[in-house]
Length: 140
Length: 390
Image (cartoon, rainbow over all chains, first blue to last red):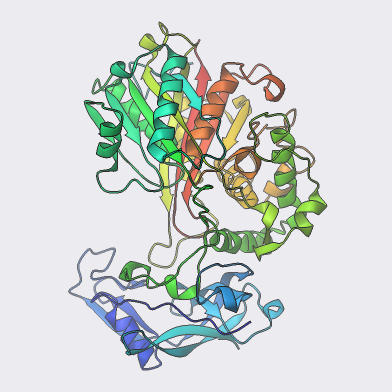
């Protein structure tokens, strides 16, 4: 079992705030100042107002709890095949929305629905030599 | 029994399940064409009678339905290449009935063909290599697989309601039991609950035998008006009710345990004006054992959280409370990537009393529910309630 080689997330202008935040070691979410919605994944508009003019970015706490998870024993994709078993999970952030992630550096048997987790950031080199970071979570 | 949704009455006049489970020397379109011939023969219709064409496949993309029309040398008045995953063909039957009922076409042909097995396609466990699509940037880095998504659902269900792996295994055992009665099923040797639990873990808590098989195959369905169907070769099977729905992550807050079937099923039951106890058999998309449990609960066949008991002790076997997938389902008969069309085909054959050893006695009302995409994440659901003509 080796560490996951995370495939490259390609950012669009809609999601740039999130990925740039990850590069700084911050979990960045969007809030619509018009209706108060905190949404993930990021969009060019508030999904409820259908208008992006009141959308802002803010740095979330990076804390949350496991909504659900699976211990992946088989994935044929490069970067994951060698890392099996790994824990893929949905984390419900304290700010409200849920996101998909992996739980790293843990005994899979210690992972449970409702367990508290905190964000960490894994930096990797991209094939075009740009350094990027992927938010992952740890128990704690 | 009347149907208010389709004032002229809509019916399935012909069906055909391609017998192949492995066809390395055929193309998707060839399987679709052979299936079209089978279903038109079944109905007593000709290729030239077709004026509505519906279809989807694993590889049909932009203009795919136009490519299919060309392959079959058809010039239909109505085209629908809706692709909402494995449930597409259940939805196509609804769309075809609406088009026929509105007078936009008279004879609608719904087609599916696949060479998933001979292409060695890793449908469930090949998830998310790198992608240059920014829309997948929030899943691709995390190793999401199809089976993994269903596994997150299963884990949450187990944590919330105490559902067990043994209960999920009962579903696989029943499907295999049914497949042993279906001469065309790919996997026919009996299995036990322990066989399922001892099989290799793929994505906890789902084992290898909790997962559907991968086969080649295809099929076809002919939809026309009830009036016309009454003059054709086989007894018509009437559309009584239908519904479609989606479930997804929303903006990060949706209740993932509530699947699309809840919305589509409620609509279909309301339209059909039937009760759950009126359903003689259910064809439930069984990509994984958990798919069946989640769908039965969300369709309302048992209270949410009690699916584990409902499927145990032969509850969904032939002769049980609600026979599910008498053909053996995707878990044991066939699963060529998108299975929705077989749900409709088997329901029709059962209602026509053509199923020999696996026949549900005196079947008059059947439900088919297709799931497309991944439960646990975003998916579509399409429900059909079908009945004998009376």
